[in-house]
Length: 215
Image (cartoon, rainbow, N blue to C red; front, top):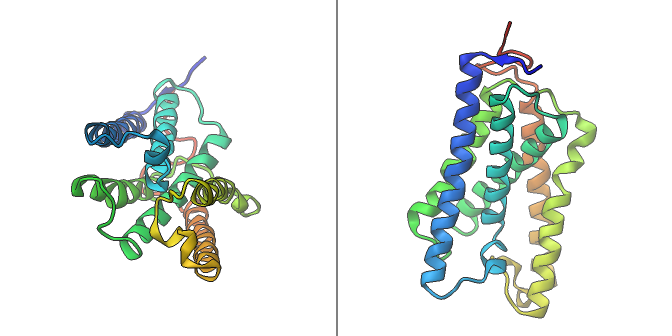
C-alpha cells in the first residue's frame, strides 16, 4: 500500500516535476529554432554536453518527483543518477562560464537558463532538501562513465566528420592541448562529484530521509 506524503514533500515533488518539464520545453524550443534555421541534425544538437545533460537531468527530476507524488520510494540507483547529473551540471556551469562564455548559437536567455539557472537550482535542491541518503564514497567513480562515453563519441566524430561541440576539443589544436583539456575535464568531473557526494551528508533544511510520510 502506498504511503501518503506530507504537503511539503508533495510540494517539493511537484516542483521537481515542473522543473523537469520546463527544461524539456526549453530544449524543444531551442531545437525548433534550429529546425527553423535549417540546422536540425539531432546528433549535433544533443552532441552538446549541456543539452544532453539537461535532458537527462529533466528525466531524472520528473522520475523522482513522480514517484514521490505516487507515494512510492525513490530507488537508490535513481538517487545516484541524480547525484551524477548534479555533478555534471556543476561542470557545465563552470566550463561554460569560464572557458566558452557567450559562445554557441542558442539565444542568450537559453544559455542563461541552461548554464546558470538550472545548475544552480539542481544543486540547491540536492543540498537543501534532505530527502536523499548519503552516497557511498566507494561509488564516486560512477560520475565518470557518462562523461567518458560522451567524450569518446565526440572525439570519434571529430576525427570522422569533423564536428565537435566545443572548440577546445578540435583535433587540430594538437594532442597536447587535447590531452590537457581531457584530463582537466575529468578532474573537474571528479571534483564536482566529490562536492555532490559530500553535500549528500548534509541533512538539509527541508525534509529528511524518510520524512514526508503521514499515517
